[in-house]
Image 1: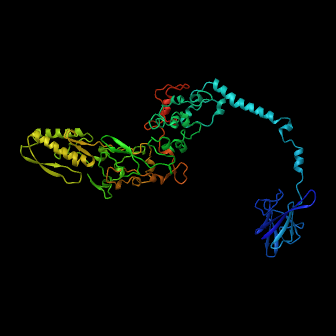
Image 2: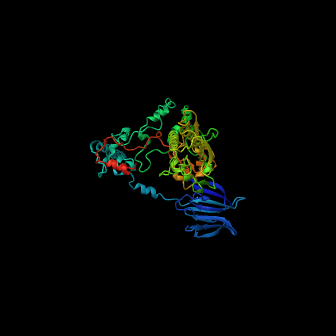
Image 3: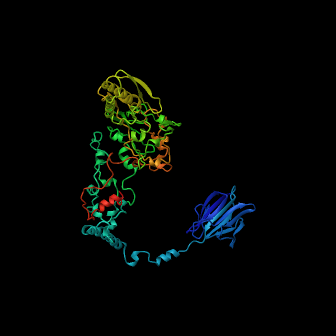
Amino acid sequence: MEAVVTYLARLSRGGVSRKPEELEAETLRFGRATNAEVYLADPRVRLEHAVLHHRPGGIFVEAEEGADIRVNGISVPSRAVDIGDVIAVGPYDITIVEAPEGKDVAIDVELVRPLSDDYEALTARSVTSLAGRGVSKRVWSWGLALAIIALFLIAPIVFFTLHEEPKPRSEIAFRLDQSWDSGPISTAHRFISMQCNVCHEAAFVQVKDEACFTCHEKITHHFDPQAPELAEVGLYQDAAGSACQSCHKEHNGDAAISIMQDSFCADCHADIEADAPKTQLLNASNFEDEHPEFRPLVMLDPVAQRSERISLNEPDKLVERSGLRFPHDVHLKKDGIRGPKGREELVCASCHVSEPSGASFFPIEMEAQCERCHQLKFEPRRPDRVLPHGQVDNAQLLIREFYSDFALRGGAGDSGGKEELIIRRRPGSEPVKQEIVKADPKQWAEQQARKVADQAFGRTMCGTCHEVMTGEGAGPLNWSVVPASVSNRWLPGGRYDHKAHFEIVECENCHAADKSHLATDVLLPKIEICQDCHSGENAADKVPSNCVSCHDYHLDGEPMMKPVASAAWTGPEVPAGQLDAEYATGDNGS
């Protein structure tokens, strides 16, 4: 329906002001609502008061539920209207007029019953200001300002200066400086929550490090500012001198005392390659898309104990020389392997035993994990004699002493005779027999010892799982085993909790051990595997993970803040043994 709406206004000097508007809508809604086609700004008009619309039979006006309209002075809920009809909507008269060519309807809207001046009359006879009662705003402002200064500044300072702090855990009814308390103290420090001067040694002075060291051991900062790659960077020198309270914020209730936001770490690490070009660290500020690929610490020379951080993006360099020759895929065959009690199927947990916390695993030990299948027996005629694991020189001396004693007790037999020496191989394989010509006992014992050492260290025992070395001076029988230098943590700068993932993913989802046939493989998943489930601290569809989820702040090897065992308590009197008991039971939240 196309309509022309003309708003009329009577001028004080006579005449009428006309303001026409052209509209196109299915219906014309009259009301005080802002979406009404005919907006009537008067409190006596409902938000939705009436509707004018075209239907078979002509133009009709209808009152909304609960509203009142009058057509030519008669109250009606609905009625057909024609040119010349006047519709009263509240204080407005709406007249149907001749529509211009091409238009369906035209109306004139005029406010004919304006509001009276009741409000102005009420205001004139009412007292609505302080000045009307003889009290000015200035007097109240100065009075309240002085009261606030007295109650919340002068009184707390006097109280803090003159009163004596109560004993630990004692309660006082009220303290005037309590208004300065910015929030509840953390659980870890709640046992001294009523002794403000333990931390706040002076008014208007931030908490000093010495106050923290009264109870806690002093530990290092996040980095060594004197390191060659950082010594000339002013930004990091300033950060190294930060006080404890710069990073550990109290009076936030049970929220973490340490700052956890990524932005705190990103201040230095987001562009560290440019700020400290000598450092080996890479830019990092967000785990979702601004974190470098993992760089495990890989052992390159177990003899010289030389290791290096190598990115998982460099597979050609990612070769770990741990001194071992352990094939994972052989031990994880789906159809099992032959063991001492027949064929059995091994899984990761068969050898990797979780620590009680579940975060990591105990180191693999020969006696606990390997000896059941790989026994170090070297002489079938004496199956009770085994070589000591991890003691290469002692093992060679034991072999020499065994055959020397064996020969002296007649075990060598007649000189020049022959006997069969059975050499054991890997469990499940057939034994190998070799004839040895007997000589005098000393010569026979030395010959036996060298041949057994050659087999035990080079082929059937040590050499099965370890890299070995031979040559003059390598050991009593010229054999030696390369020290096993297995990385207990490929990412020493990170922290990973295996327990949190045990029930979610299988080991092989992250570590492809069943496909690894070389001990030089680094079975560490790439960062994209972690990013499938983890994202930045503000993630909504993944696990939110900030920097401190995986990284410690202080230098590696430094303990968490813990109580000082020998330092004297310099705060209020504490009952004997109370602090020690609290730390021992964990009541202080540490």
